[in-house]
Length: 212
Length: 234
Image (cartoon, rainbow over all chains, first blue to last red; front, side, top):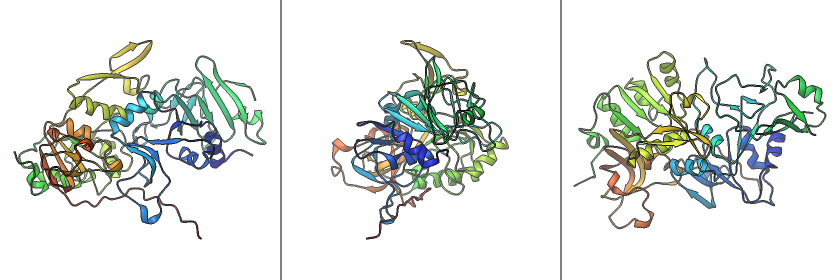
């Protein structure tokens, strides 16, 4: 059975290591916070200016001055620090954030990422995504393996405008896990339970090696 | 020089003109200068270029200036929450320049610090890099981005003293400090004006040199995505 959203988030959480500073994108990546193991110490960064992001507030704790990058109300922790957007992106661009988990519309076999714009439809903007993929040490993408209409999202070349070139290190889909290494391309390293290689081949355009 | 003004209208008196460039602090609706945005609308200044991370929502924040068609161009990183923005952009009434969020923040910081340009890896190989100078440093490619300054910056802080020293609160800080520094003229609205000496000088976020006028405002502080968790029952 393919993985669901929570399974994918749980798998992404396995990429977190003790002491990591991590930025989680909007959507499935936000769920990763629910699966961080008790045995590791991880600090979450929110690019609107916060390190040490806590859980969503109880009803009587809601503070309009305390939101995450998805504009959701959140809470602080004892370790929390606040800073400006310039300082926030200095730590992102400067390579101080260990890992970012992001959603995607398309990923190419050399790690190009497209996740901010569909020409002809409304353009909402890239927000901090281009800065994150350019600056964070390791980028993990979590997305459905194919689009709602069944079209492959793992491609030879992205068709949509790019967020970054050769920036993705790992892709976790509902069917499996792929690594991408510079100059070496894409490798399938895990398959979701009861999913066959044939099934993955049928919904993947990108060329990949299999090392399951 | 007296920096404290009685209200937002008085604080913008003589500062607004058609075709001006305005920086407006805030992230989403968090930390926006609610009172000064309304006063800028009431000033009637038009053909504005507005530099702000977001464009408000339809009936709040910078959405107020879109309703009245006072904005000619926006420089932003994300505008997804505003339907009127979408309509004006798709019909060609509104110009839009997207900047990656960190590039936008650094352009404001650089502008305020007298730095006309800088190099960044953000956006290399994307549409953002088109037409921009590319340069290699240590084998990696960077693009040049330019510093930004404004004719007027409107910012929101938590507390100010009469010298214009500012303290922000939690994630309402966001773009406000850099935009305060990058304004030829900066007006700050705050929740509280406190006596000189009552803020710890070691804890001031924006020194008063960057702030020319101050008002105490009333703030709705609208929440875009009220997200809560349930208490586990005992």
